[in-house]
Length: 566
Image (cartoon, rainbow, N blue to C red; front, side):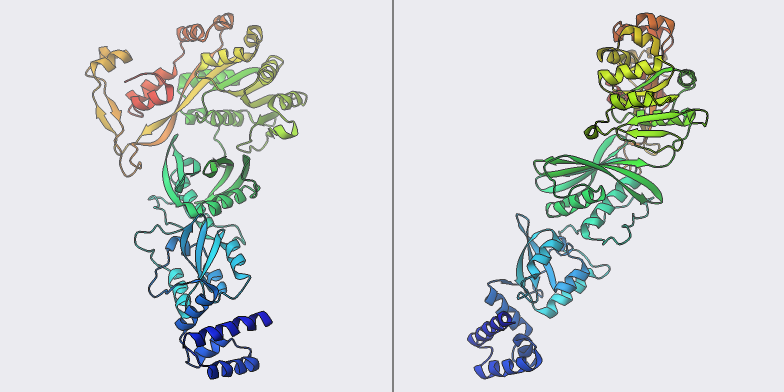
């Protein structure tokens, strides 16, 4: 209390020196203060001796702070939006502008509250420099900024920015019960709502030198969603890490976790990974839909011929079915659909995955935990002692896992496994590179399937064209000149200007016949040639079929297969 009195004694002297009060008025104000407990400045304004503006300027001088006349200065909407309405009124404070280096100028009515700066720093997630404003102006500015329909400052990007919604916008993802809808929470929710409602499979929050850029992967290709002001980056990244229950204080090591939310009535799981970069932590969210996979191979896009070979392999009581392709080629969807086909009370199904992406009732699913000593190879050995009928191996990437999976296929288990390889023949070569002997391959592998996901041309804007003779010759279609045309991407509002909307899978299925078994150990080219002689349709041929049907474009098939078509 004595410190407060000393402060106001200094204020009285300052007001006298400014010619705003005389000694008699100060003495009278102090006497009233002793009786009522009101502050000197409040008494002086109440008696009409000084204006609120006079008092605010005097306080600013007293503490060496900037005076902000809110009748003349428009607060930066990006900065002002950082402090919730309730806290703004509680602290009688308003963020005015960013000062650089993470510093925020916040104007207050009363700079004498010693604990106020620290409280504001915690609430805003920024270091704070105080300024002083007239209380009535401050209260009016807070009300105006937080009233419905308030507009941002011209030329400024509001925070949180209302992102453009698609025609079929999803219902907003509501914050969890008890959660405060802070600007960071609102920003994250809106970015995710927009991306997920448009069909994003991944959402990337990428720190750059001047902004936090949000990009999302649509149909396998990323595009910009929004840019978040750099000043909001710490709060947004903290919110994303909080969703996955990651360590907020750890900023120098990678972390990953999971979260759940609902968007437009859809229950979704998110895999969230945080990675330090030179401009801050990058956070990537993988969107996993909980809806059960339908046990329908035709729905995956398999042709009748491929489906027949695939089902033949799945009906075998033992052996390995290998699904090949790069990351993002749809291997997990194919394997999970196969699990659904096999899932009945008469079978024991067990998986080992990194991580478990979708939960399937009736299937025992094991997640790799390398830090705890649970690896693919070690987990697989333990699983095989548990007498399963079907085992799914989420990734074959080392010799121990490869040999363990092939041994399991040879000893009476049906093994489903994912493998990184360019095509079906390359899958066999990859297993050989991992140390699996030709004899073990010959007795364990039933079928190798390679797949890709091709973007579908937008049906609203695709345009037909006649290919050149050179193109037809390269595709082996010169004899069909004048009867063959293709479609190409154009771009419209419905497809976001990309020319594509949705994806379709293409497959090549290599059944390991007696002839191929004799060739195991040969090069991938020899195996591929033998499989084609046996009737295998290649990824390239499947891609060209999609182009002839007007489903996709030659440029897209080139992109996903790496083979020249145009």
